[in-house]
Amino acid sequence: MKKPQSTSKPDDPEAARQYCLRLLSGRPRTHSELGDAMRRKGFTEDVVADILERYSEVGLIDDALFARAWVDSRHRGRGLSKRALAGELRRKGVDAEYVEAAVEAVSDEDEREAALELARRRYRSLAGQEPEAVLRKLVGMLARKGYGAGVAIPVVKQVLAEADEEAAELLDEESHFE
Image 1: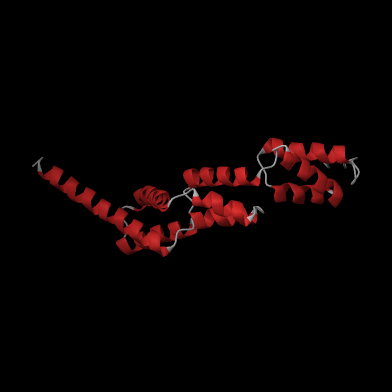
Image 2: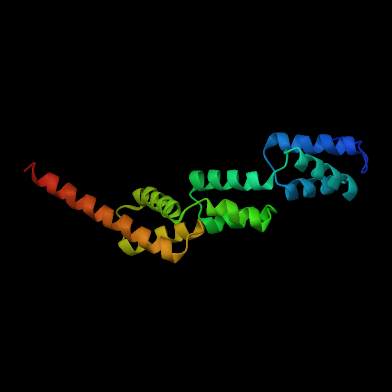
């Protein structure tokens, strides 16, 4: 079933305001995302610019706040690296200064801990496979999350060392049952 065509005119500021508010009610959006969506909808550049300026003034659009929230959520929830987070924010049209400030909130230690947790979790499903394959799969997974070799390789080595230690402890415990 076809959607009915919008009856709003390209220069109708009220229709543009309502459309922008509808977009914002779904989830936070960047200045760039809203502008692009409103232009695709057919609103004139003057109307788009006026609405975006006004909504920025009253705090409905705040790219710096958006960037901080995005980094916090995606780093905690998905374990993404600073590099991956910065890339996502740039693709959403966030200014470089806001991207840099938001990404700097993640310390190198926080980033390493996130990588370590991801590798530990993934290792559980790989246990029992050849060590070379496990190493390759874990480093590859971390690379897809944006971690460079300088973080990924030491983290994976640590996870593999922990696994060997656990196996040795289990063997020691089993010898007590004999």
